[in-house]
Image (tube, rainbow, N blue to C red; front, side, top):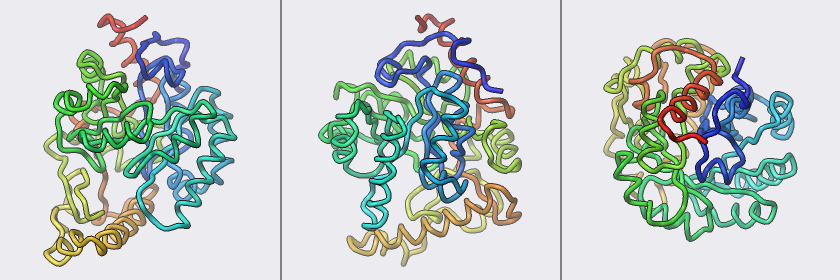
Length: 338
């Protein structure tokens, strides 16, 4: 069972003050791993779990509103919702707007935007007291977030899983710190020493993904969790063969077989102003279907798993609340607590 938030120290930062949590830890939205029980466990422990709407509705088969209420039945603590706002179909945009509206109606006040212009999300949620943080991998995207009115930045560095950035954590923070917003470190944090280092560096908090997959509350297949525990940083590679852009995954026989670079024709189409959107959509749909199937069953020689370099510091499966508590106590012992 997750550790209740009142049993861990309060670690005040700009993130905790804005969002109303005790520990500056975000359980990042993950496709397909963000099931309600995991989101709730991190929030209950004093951090904040973020719902990934497609995972909630398509993978875990919850009605969106009922899924939020399920989380609320486990914990009353704050939760967040991810708004993936890339240019896509009108149908998806309408669905995303509905999810934002329902989230507000259900009391959600923290939103994480990704890939597109966050202005419409900010304009909708700010009057209701909502806070928006925007995923960025370099300064130009951070500036677009600032121009869009966001309240904070999630700096996705080269150690992250999934769609990682290109900068190391310190370089990325240096690049965006002068924009004046709180910045969250995303990538490479698997245990307490890395968390403490990020706070000392000047980050307002940390977003963890891979670390929270290796928990009992996450419904990922045991083979996925075991692969994370076994892996070292050098086992994480970037492949273009899944979504058309580099994705951080664990190296295994399947990834070695399909390779890490898109073919010449695919690369040409991915550079084409009009064709690249459809190519990425085709790649993404294919990989989304594969990930959805592999969440609850092993695909054998077709298994692949997204993960970041934080695997270097993950040596066991343990409850989400235990992880959050350990991070908090380490920060407090380092003089970073209240």
